[in-house]
Length: 93
Image (cartoon, rainbow, N blue to C red; front, side, top):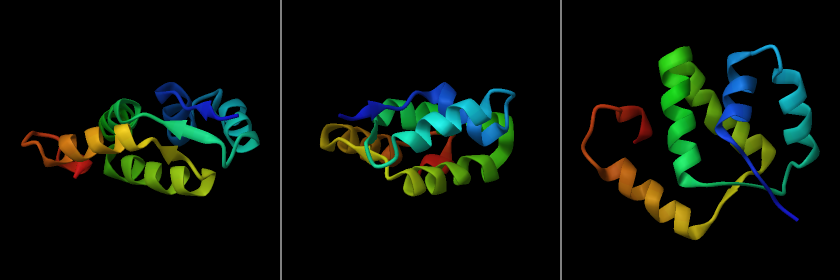
C-alpha cells in the first residue's frame, strides 16, 4: 500500500517547523511506499524557495530520493511540461 505525500509534511520537515519530527517519523515509516503528484512537488518547491531560499528547495530532491518517493507516469509528464514552460520560477527546471 502506498501513501501520498502532502506539501505541508514536506515543507514542515525541510523548514524545521515545530511538528517536523512527527512528519519525518511518518514519512520514514512509509519510506519506499511513498508517492507524490507533480502538483504537490511544484507547490512544495515554490513554498520552500519562498520561505527557505534555493537551498531549501534543493534539499527537497535529496529528501525525496532518501525516502524512495515515486511519481506516477502521468504526474511526471505534467512536471516535465511545467519545467519547460516559460516563467519566473526557474528553480523548477
